[in-house]
Image (cartoon, rainbow, N blue to C red):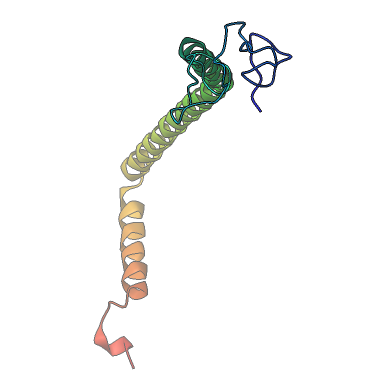
Length: 149
């Protein structure tokens, strides 16, 4: 049975003295109509319509507060985690930029070394290029038909 919030000791809408739990006089029969209201305007739980509405509003308010508190708690936990992830991503991006820059510098050094070598030793450079071409040609299956059996 429902308890009446205005009278915690009462468990029904009617007392033995002929008054409802709210202290209002009740009908002499104490029988509820099919609409759930007795002839005195009280529901079968002992609460009037405004009391029931107030109770419903209170329950909705408590549920809304609980939901709001839960969302706040989750947001406070998610915020720092997102910041850590952003920091990690920014750090990884910066390291990749550095590595890209280092590779670019290394490529530039090798190109400069190759230029210097070709200028200092032009005939040796041509000979190395011819030999490298022949090796690549043989590896790729090219060359004259007399070498194939």
